[in-house]
Amino acid sequence: MEGKEGVRIIFGSRFLRVYKKLPPETQKKIEVKSGLLRINHFHPSLHAHKLHGELTGFWAFSVAHDCRIIFLFLDDGNILYESVGSHDLYDRL
Image (cartoon, rainbow, N blue to C red; front, side, top):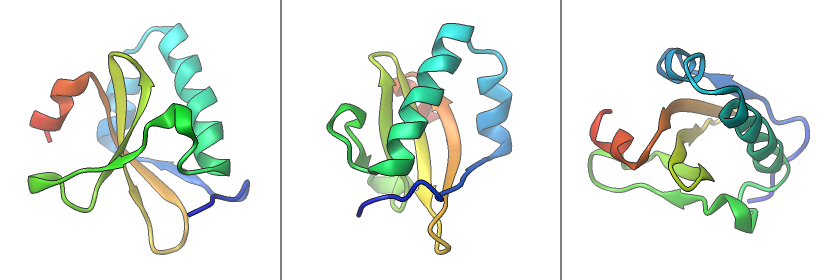
């Protein structure tokens, strides 16, 4: 599924709470990777993948080695960022 530059990214409250506490360097990486996600949902550097188990329906992509974003593709074509954090964030949802 190819993205379009008109794709909006909507930030969930959980995502925003954590994002505000991240270092500026990590926030910048998120901005860069979000730009890639909007244009090509499956850009190789994102390592986007479906989640399973209790998180079935969600997807995740890598921002950096120790930082991932969990998101949903919405029916209207936009993307909802649910949460951000290290790999253990999968256990906290």
